[in-house]
Length: 302
Ligand code: ATP
Image (cartoon, rainbow, N blue to C red):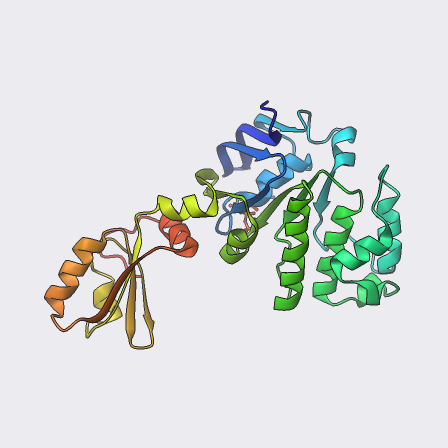
């Protein structure tokens, strides 16, 4: 294992019955980075994280954390994981949950610090069952950090949080990175990956299809966003060269395409009065769409 790699998957393939969830995945988590594992539903993100947590057995390939088996006791005391909300007793209070978890670790963070990080000071005595969905999620975050872990896995940490709570959690995740901790998060939110991650791994249908800094992932796609005011409607525009997505934004037609020059030529042929034309580089969202786009059979709808 390289010095920098704190967690790795080597050629991992994982099946659930006949479903191929991971197909020869190599993944490296480097010390001190915030790594986002990004992918559409069913891409294999949770499976990859579960293998690194040792909560799923490795079927083929190898998984290591701190150079050892992910389930090893010593490994578990040095890493934290944000658990799913189900399976947590409703009758214990926030403070009791924290104390229970802190007791597992040799050098836990003080409860007051954890409450402040999660913004839960005011509900310390409230029972879990009486918390809002967002507060439950924030408690899960605090529990993941109880042991002051070197490495923390966050599976969709901000799902279901309101904007303010999401921003608060982002701030805490950033601080983890600044404090030299390593964090792996899975997310559907491109904005989140862009805001937090030093590196992004894009999974699609069980394979790593792109990997790099948010900027390099953006640059990997040749897709460009063509915008203009035109009488060509979205249905006709969908048939233009290299089209990935078509949208109307107010009066503007917006087309994401992998063949911008050919598209602009055809668009001008169709509508010589085309106005307010701009061609810009793709954002992370566009890059992601272009990377994970299913090849569409010719003439298929949508
Ligand atoms: P999501 O973003 O929807 O949570 P994901 O990227 O985390 O998806 P996984 O949960 O790893 O994806 O699932 C990968 C594939 O394996 C999917 O096709 C899923 O339906 C399948 N799968 C996951 N868990 C099981 C299971 N216990 N039994 C059967 N199939 C499963």
